[in-house]
Image 1 (tube, rainbow, N blue to C red):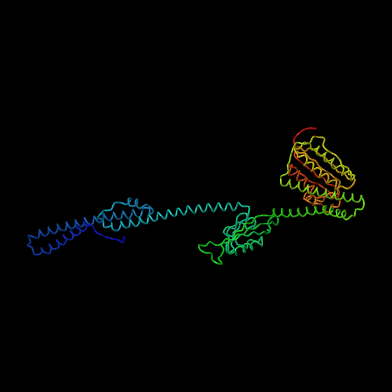
Image 2 (image 1 turned 60 degrees about the horizontal axis):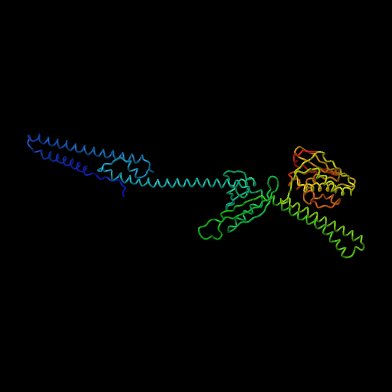
Length: 500
């Protein structure tokens, strides 16, 4: 439709205009033709002329009034079009417009204009609907992004992502704390800020050069607060998204790295390796002795019965030592794995200690060591596994006897401590240095300067500690003075039973 301004007069306007022109022309012709009329006819001429002028003026006035009314209607249309909401529906917009005279010369201009505005209003309504839909999607994506950010910040593992230009575009809270990046707001971060670990930027740069999506795991040591910590670093290259076939030499979209603290696992691996090495060493010693004396017997070096008995006693002793080592290892493994069968019952702690006292008494008499029984006269009730607590007490007493010189003294005492019961083994032996006190409960640990005093596996004290603390929820500690003696103290919960 042509929306150019159109002025098409109505039939009535045309008739009025023609009539006014005709009367004006008639008046002019009558005036000119009446110049030669006689004087008596002048009155008629002037009357006719005046009547024609009046009629012509009336017609012109009527025409002007009609045109003025049409102009007012057009102004009202334009005013309503200029004031109404452009996003209003087209149908309701047309109904809200004032009526327009069918013969108005403005109809050809105003109606196309109204149709154009209605079409624009409809398109604008569609655009507004699309805008609201996009706004809703943006809010949904923003909420999803916030949830993902909260998830990343809640991870204990450090997560960082690097773009193709070595910029850090994602760093979660754990990574900020680990690498001490801090919250720099809108400041650009890059690989140069990862100065706490020289190897990490190299791993990220190497991952960024990969041509396909790959994942690689490395281990590195980071200098963090509290000392160096080992971390497992898993790097994944992210190829750029393509709509067709991959382009050779395509620039990567970036690299994401996840850092997980494995210091505990590293320590466990180290302890395991040391445990296996120490166990192997401890087993080789009795096996070597057994093998050596068996070879002597086989070669006939024991010529008399006395020598053969001596060799057999040594072999038997080494076999017993190996058996004790294996038993202790199995007991420790069962306790640490939590598969050992524990039968706790209310027991008299003094009865258990008296039995342990009788078991080790021959070993004390062999070294002329005074074994003192200083047990409480009160009933000390405890909820314990009798066999396991007996083993712990025997281990502590045997350890004291082994590292106490001849003619020394070992004292076993017990007492009540409110809701707990306690017993301790005090000796006048060689004692321990402070650094040895902190390690004496480690598996296979033996004080170097005391190894010659007595054979041992280094498992008796660790086994006692596991029995007291892991099985019975108690405490086992040691106080010692080098060259004076040691006191091993066991505290366990009581069974709250009264008696004598």
